[in-house]
Image 1 (tube, rainbow, N blue to C red):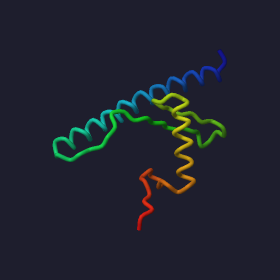
Image 2: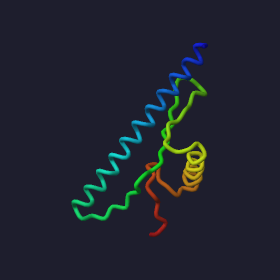
Image 3: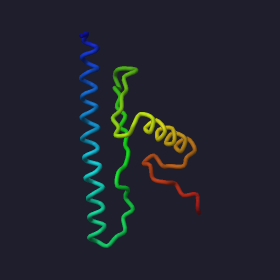
Image 4: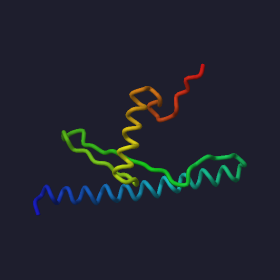
Length: 103
């Protein structure tokens, strides 16, 4: 196995571990939000499960980029296309909060 193949195998393992940890943190955070809302009597509209994609890239090495996600590749690409279209249309803020057009 070449050094490049070893590096890619290690990167794949690293990304898989990141995706697993992120899903655990996101799930725990959503569960905590639901619990607090229930205790405080505040209706919380939080989905049972959310998809995520985290993109990682090397600032120092052109062309290196990967992502970690709990979605299928197809679903993640659809979500990414939707995100880009909304960003380009100015429908969401840089932080992802909806922009209202009402004045």
